[in-house]
Image (tube, rainbow, N blue to C red; front, side, top):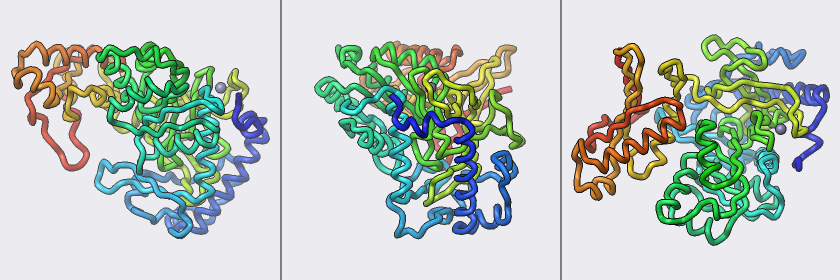
Length: 431
Ligand SMILES: [Zn+2]
């Protein structure tokens, strides 16, 4: 089933015509109503889609500098909703939506849900956080549009997830991959069986995750796991999602125009080349984004997909452009490591990645603090306690599945990892 066949299977030439028309309108709207865009883009002419590459980028720093409403193209009274993402450098990143923007969001989320297997009448268990974060409400609204029965459980409180999943038996599950895997693992620990829940499909995202993690989730629940991509600066979840073929994520490119650029130079890269994803909103009115540098590393293809959808697809995300580590020739993103660590209840979110390049073969070592409950079970902290070592080995095993690397994990004494007010120092390189 395709949610919106007219839009999703549009002929390439018709799509390009529509994109150019919408792009011109979006740029004109931004120039007319947002001083920053007027300053940067005023007087630019777009003869074709190729001219997009001549326009300057918008960056996350622009959102921070224009905090909170400097990039809004409509007065506050015309904003139907505001979302925000937690700021790693102080103030959050604030985004606004008109009623029409929310309607676009419901539409693209409906496409993504249906592409992953959701059908009207299904029950969907939403384990994404609700609130300023776009995950929970984005899935919620899109699911209502499709005609699903939505269970807005939000994140956290694992025991409540176990109870509702077992008693309600939803067809679909959505959340961050690390959290849903934690739901499965902790259910098994309590003698439950996630495979008996009857979940048919899952939609997971909001953090980079690998095929290893996908396999682990599918084994755990016995369901098909689909990747969903989005970011609040563009709309939230629903920018792109996988169909049943799972050969890349279909971008809703009648609303969000994707480009791939060299992360170092900003030069456009041809289809198939890995680089940084840049997105331009074509229909958003409250906060139009022109050539927004997402910081996410992926590749683009416009080859036809076996599912019949004709939109461009992005490869599954590699991680963030600005924080990639290379260990033994393997690209490792601290975000992947963090996601795996944060999913373990026995650990505190205080950790340090040490890349040791003093030997011929670089090694990655992780120091992480144990959670108070684990320390109580072990009768206090002792570096050689077998209980702590066992948790360390279990985490190392999980990290090997995520990264493909053998990583040493040490549980260190409480309060030994330095705390930071701003963006924490998470990586130390020894060379
Ligand atoms: Zn497809």
